[in-house]
Length: 177
Ligand SMILES: [Zn+2]
Image (cartoon, rainbow, N blue to C red; front, top):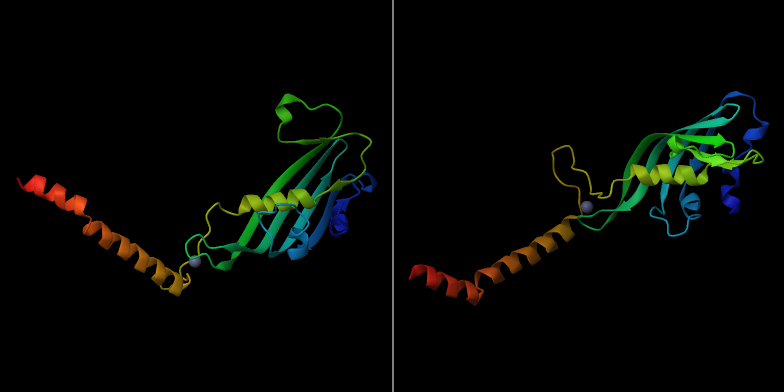
């Protein structure tokens, strides 16, 4: 395991039955630990409550902060706010029953459970497929204005090209006859 993720290793076997609270700060170093990461930069606070039961662990995550993402409209990087809550169940036992498809199962002999991957996945799930700069208070886009102006120029040019396309003239003549 990457050293930077050791802090996320929870020795649940040593915990008493009941609730236990944890908090983590995750940043670029954290995201850098994941191969082919969808998210590489960010700063988030993770509150985690672990409900330890005899044969079940319930993790409640409350994650708040921001990630750096690329705007799908103007391609600039910007900070995207994330606030998400997720619950994850881990069953201690050797049999995965059919109704337990959303439950992780770990063997009786296991003493630790690392929460880095689940936390990373929670953040990824909270990020929408498409992220664009939000509008300001006046309802005006906060996108990179220069890029958008450039883009509009290209679109206008293309529209003009279509207008003078000789094929359209031919069609017009046909319609006029
Ligand atoms: Zn933008």
